[in-house]
Length: 127
Picture 1 (spheres, rainbow, N blue to C red):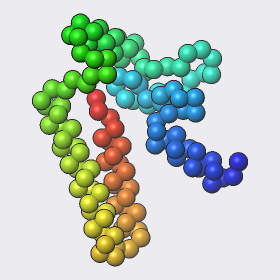
Picture 2: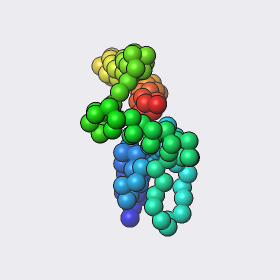
Picture 3: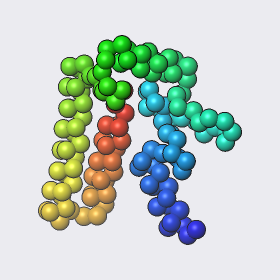
Picture 4: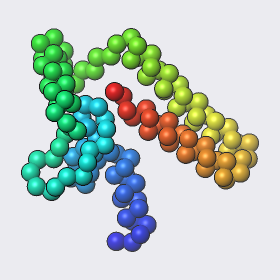
């Protein structure tokens, strides 16, 4: 495989957050990156026992409440924080678009795009 094809595959895997076999690269509870493990047995879903326990407790609470399995329950503070982070992401994207329209130099656009990617990556960590 060419270097370009390998870098595209790696980038795609990083963007989707999935390994080639579809297993998550991040903890299913806290979102931390999982260590690369052995290729035997079941893939890890959680970084440790405490995250596994918290996920179990949440699943049990969802079942008791009668909410759908895929329901997401957020507190008012979590919603406000999420809205603030989404606003930061939108502002960063608008800044890049405005700079491109104003004819900004490539290094400046690259710096702004890097910042945009960092804000988006931070937003992925919902917990």
